[in-house]
Image (cartoon, rainbow, N blue to C red):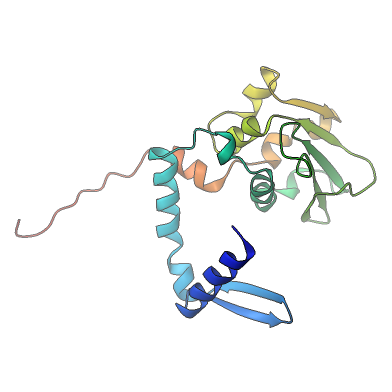
Length: 191
């Protein structure tokens, strides 16, 4: 999404009372309002429906390393690893130039994402085609299966690599979309 379109959407959501903006001088923070938080179950159900009934076929036009990595960063559970700095590098050889290497850093209970080498020791290196890691993230493939088939290569300290599946959880909406859909009985009185 272009910055202009994003700004317009944020203005619309603010005007509609779904989000509120704070800060200033180009450094704004947006938070959901009470009305926005009430939309969460609706958005989750729509995401689950989309995962179940309109899945991506992972064509190159559907792949975005930045979107994938930012979503991963939001879902990382830093409590799984030792209480020291952990650096996991992702290498996507088929991603566009400038988006091939990413680093997730877990330190002091916080997780950061870097597009530039943060320096220091790399604990784990994961080499994967972008489509394969996207399939894992969207619950279309299992991390253990793609590693077992050598579609994804993992290098590093075995004490850390063994915990990767617990650290890198799949997309929340995708996991929700893999569950059996709820049975809904639509009954309109008088009909």
